[in-house]
Image (cartoon, rainbow, N blue to C red; front, top):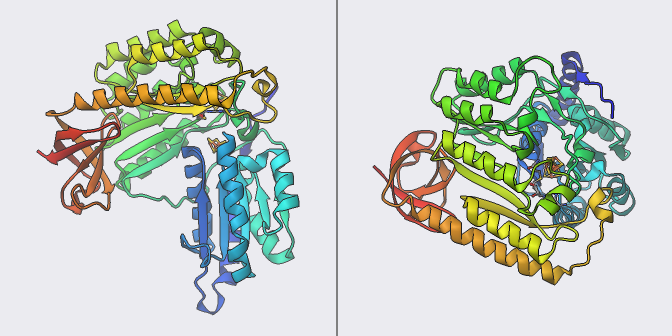
Length: 470
Ligand code: SAH
Ligand code: SF4
Ligand code: F3S
């Protein structure tokens, strides 16, 4: 599949920002303060995209609300990875009938991965007349122009044509937090795992230029952010499409060289190309968190092959061993799919034994969900939902037991954590994260938010650690 890298140049983004200024004039006339609601589903990439939508909306003069009855503009940023996610989106979009009735001028937009699928865009067109604007992830950079078209022409606008995607720099961003920040380093995916919809809706793999990434990281550090997560569907392929001699490990080293006290995190890594160089670099870069999210998906070689994952169990275990050789304290988390078409008892037993062998700090487990247009959707799938649920429950139990055991090992230890927010609970009012990303609840003054502190771990459970300031 030939793909020519496309760039949306800065002049194009400037034009979009000029449209924001135009909309600003209109919607804030007579001193009005219009409000927008951005509702996000799915992964961190979508969170990062929503921060761009909010960046544009803020330039148009919108404030933000969580209440759909107060909102003049609602943007629902959707996910397509599993059926459950799509059902939630459709249910919630349907419920916006009420707010639209109460506020007839309300504009409702649905964007993101779900509507990049033709059948879903059609479904919204036919069955959800309250939706005024539909646009796929590739059109996000021209959201102002699309919104203006709805406002001026008073007609529905659909923009989710087939597209390989481009790279756009200079879109304004309005970040949610002040301590942690998402930083997209690349977009799209070329892996085509046979169960997965992402490559179809997010387009081809394309990296941002290292100088753009480093400049954004530097600006984040200067703005006081302490925890920067580099995002991509498969960060280990970073730079392959650029031919600039910078790979993902090099990029970590470049960001590590930025002066300041902050942490570098990243996700997601694909085991197919997690190199020894990556682990060596992680160990050598003092700002890089000792955490890797390395989705294994299955412990069975037969299933891995049918998933088109390009590694086998032995290679995966070897990577874990290498990671632990360089960083004995590394936190390892993973994703697993249960009930892939044709997965047998033996295949599932292989997954259980792999989990026992690796002892993941945390596991994200999913029951296979059939995605229209993917190769796995046409594979024979003889097992029932009940069979799969039984396996799912067994895996969850194992995952919880191991997480609980791993957390118990922290008790009595003193470690450095980054305080990142309030919990709203009285006993442990602050939340924080260890270097490896484990959640620690503690008690302290909220002025500690955004600071690294030493904490002694006093208790734990499956999901979190509890501590006191040391
Ligand atoms: N790019 C990342 C993950 C993206 S999706 C990676 O390759 O690791 C996040 C997780 O959702 C995947 O790791 C997988 O475990 C799960 N997932 C993806 N498609 C799925 C499907 N059709 N059914 C169930 N789970 C799925
Ligand atoms: Fe999906 Fe595989 Fe790409 Fe991850 S690597 S986004 S699972 S196709
Ligand atoms: Fe969902 Fe799209 Fe992310 S399908 S998981 S929001 S890339």
